[in-house]
Image (cartoon, rainbow, N blue to C red; front, side):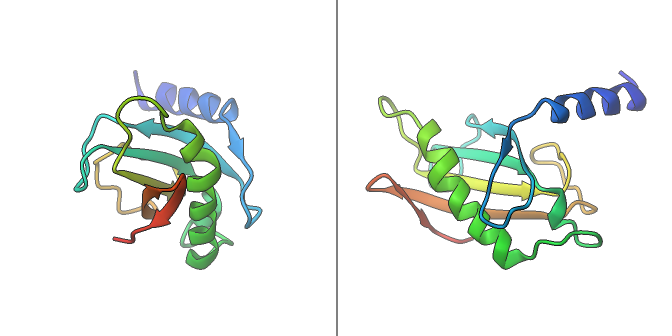
Length: 129
């Protein structure tokens, strides 16, 4: 697959992606969930979202508003998708990126925010990095 074809597939995928409303009003698009990579606390679920408005040069949403959005996404999007039966993750990580990035690959041109949470009494408790 060449760069042009990959770009067309990506744009088509994002166009059909799930848009998630957040308190800041920015457009957040659910990208994926990664469950097969353990974190420092053990089983970790990573919920990744595309948030073009956090871009450092052209964005309109700052880190404080994005942090509130990530808290909201953990409570309202991620928690309902964590299994009730079976192994529960020790940690949930919510990430926002201004563009799709490959997990684990340095992408210095991308703006990315990450927050870590533990599940306690069926709510997300911020842990910070």
